[in-house]
Image 1: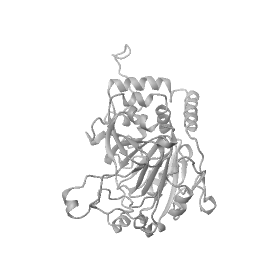
Image 2: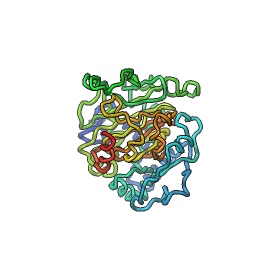
Image 3: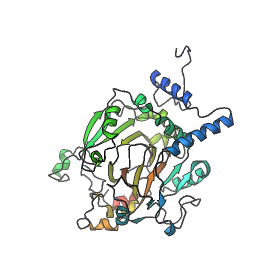
Image 4: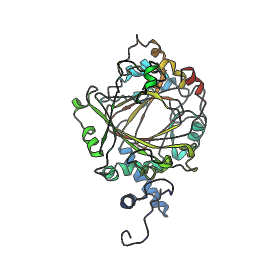
Length: 404
């Protein structure tokens, strides 16, 4: 019995086939659901709860970003047409974008950026977002009650500390600078075929840390400790869901915490093919962390639950201009160019690349179609989660022409 009752508490986001069904998690959610009520039989109270959550989310947005090229756009990103206009999303020369806001400069946010993505309000433009997703183009949607409820809970003092526990050790990537590039351990065949450069070394080191240990490294305000050439840590959580046992100490509660990413047919906007979901993955970034430019071979829904992340995006048809490390390389699919300090002479094609950018803030969800390129900069301490659901083949030709 819990709390003198033989009835087990079930939170409103409970799903039988996935999630954390432990007594500890039930008790934690019972406590915070009582503190942060969201939906009631009283419409007036429900509206008040929603307004409370919106105010919390708004308080977590320290900066405002405007479109630098507003007058060049044939559409208004805050009032986009029902369906994607021709040549959507607008893109600009990569050199202009990087010079306007160098990736290593996270201390001076730019008020005007090269944004080409539509920004939809879940309350009034859900149907537009669905149209754009079905057209397989990127966009951002905000003000989803399910998302902002999670944002409010995750930003309560000590909630994440209680959720993640004091002793569990999670995957944490470590780098001696602010650059993080995925890599896989090369095999004998790759080395024999010459796919691996003789001087290649893993760009990062995989560690296991508790949440508090990571926070101790990441939650610093001394600018000297946050310079690009100083040590950085990138914290990860993985909820396996219906994939089964995919990671040691997997974080199955992510399916309860992020119900909008549950593999349900009714989650039609976020879950295109629920049966092909590949878990829920979260990455907590410290200020300055850069995830190098790359593409992923599946649909991707990305939510920021706290802090800010700057995304620089490219259409798959920019593949050759982005100068990727080739198939067989331990970091294949990633750009060989250091975007923080591009060598324009060594990589002349990179000067022709076209990109657009968007800063995701708490409560924003980005849809990234299959094979779209993305380069990510943590503008401060932040919490981001994503999930993938199936593959769309619309952009495969461009990727195949690029050697993948």
